[in-house]
Amino acid sequence: MASLRYPFSVVYSAEDYLAILATQSGTHALGETLSAEFLSRVHDRLESLKMSQLTVTFVALLTIGRRRPHPGM
Image 1 (cartoon, rainbow, N blue to C red):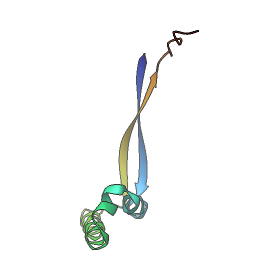
Image 2: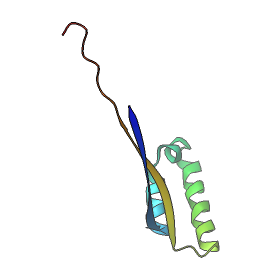
Image 3: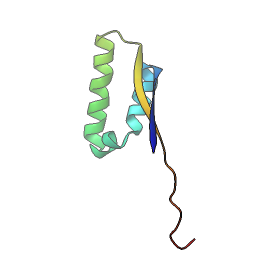
């Protein structure tokens, strides 16, 4: 089996980042009231830092393995 990591970055506008953050399961898990407050606080923080763009880094993991033959084959 082999595994490879592919780091990559995506630049989001603050508005796009908030829109994506609003779709995340962790944000939904907060419930309607708390998620609205959370998103508002993130918005306010981004504005206070004068961040119109964010760079988010991800790591994609590719794992390749070989299937063992079935014993009956």
